[in-house]
Length: 317
Image (cartoon, rainbow, N blue to C red; front, side):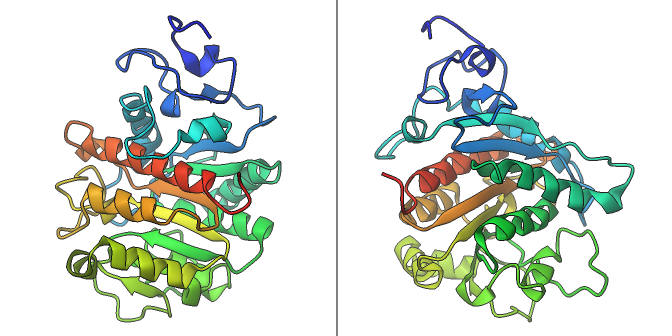
């Protein structure tokens, strides 16, 4: 590549490496990765699922994937500070665009998302998904459990448990982990929920490190507890951006005060290097409520931490 080229989303001739491009110009693929539907040689496919019809408060997360891609251009010129290597030197990463579904037939959407995810991971690449509301994690989990075996362990960052009981399998971003546990898609006993700060008396057996515990016990203690529960099991990592305090992430549908700082969240993820991550998503960015793109920027940084974890997982050199 000529260092004076631009629009690396389409002109990039390799899936590896970090190449600077003006942050304010060019096509906004995620982190300037090649925009392609071709999965040949791809280690991780980045995709968007622009769904927000499962929200219970403010809609707008359908615009999240676009916002995160745009914000990522501000940090795509070098590897994130403190990483021991550039994830793009070890991982061939491509932006494969967004999942298509027919919004006019909402009952079909979960199956469409699951089939789309399966069509990617069944070809070999890992999947990093940009949401969309948090319901998208449920069909994504089902696709990953089909590939890696059920139950998976869930590493879940959120202000909410998303395990509120339900009787009719509704499409709701507050009930999907209830069903994931009930149907054996995830194992609550080897899963960890971090940052919760809304009341749900029934934990369903999930190991919870709520936001006050994170603040009081510190980052290292949270990392140690998460490692103890996750062990070497296949882990699906999901991060609802409302895990962060609204001062760090105002652009979301259900903000809750008292949350994690971006530093705490990034440090916890960095400290979990070596866990067996098999799939990952960052969800609930709603740019209409954002201020100066800080929520989308935080999501882009967190997505890079996820790629770093994926590059460090067991079995990779």
